[in-house]
Length: 353
Image (cartoon, rainbow, N blue to C red):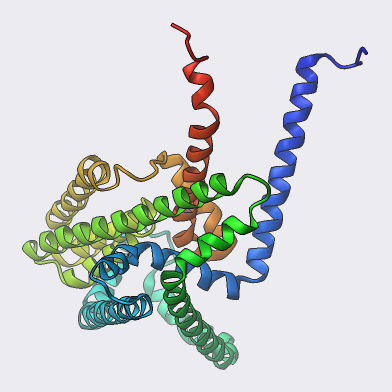
């Protein structure tokens, strides 16, 4: 039976249908996640926390600790560590926040002095401050209430995520068994392998990123302390937090450190601070990333930037934090499928020379 369309056109049409179906399913999934973000966000954060804490939990199990007790001890350790780190970071930012803000204001003054447009200066902005406050003062109370509601929502999501981490750690075996039981036909092994590869990618990303963030923050803090830049500890804490957003977080935190050095210590010290930041970035890109994250899914920087941009457009800061590990999981699934369905063809028929 002859067809009206040639074979290449039919293949192109078939691929277009597949792409449209995949994009449609992905769009519906993103829409559902955004609609139910209050429930979805704690689940995703709990998955990241479970991936980061999995080695500690497994070590406790090897020590013959009961599963529920091991999960509880792991969560307690997380609360202690996160609470301690948060206290150190907040205390450092409070102690050095005034210095950082004053230095940034001085940097803005210098920039306005040399590059400001005619008729627009910081003095003009200050003279209009009272008018602006009077204009927008009516919304201050609603802004405070909105801020309090956001803080309450964040605390609730954090508590829910911690509880989910406990259950994910304790019942990981049951979850895998349930996933196998829900898999259609004979695809249980494939689905389990894909889930394992995705979780391994997230686990490697979280563990490697945490180690790299700590080393980056330590090196930059030591360098800024040697240069006697004010707020060095707070800037190091900012570098540690920003490292969880690849490339963009390091750029922003490094820019703040250089601006503070420029405002408080002058142009020469700012150049040295820039050298410290660039040296740390070179160390991360050429040594830390290949060595620490060599066993995880490697992604091109362009893919990482696109993932961060898409995550920011969908869910703001939370989306930026979740975009890269979720993309790593997707790349892990694709790698598993490629290894299963392309290896036999690439190896050729059995018995071939």
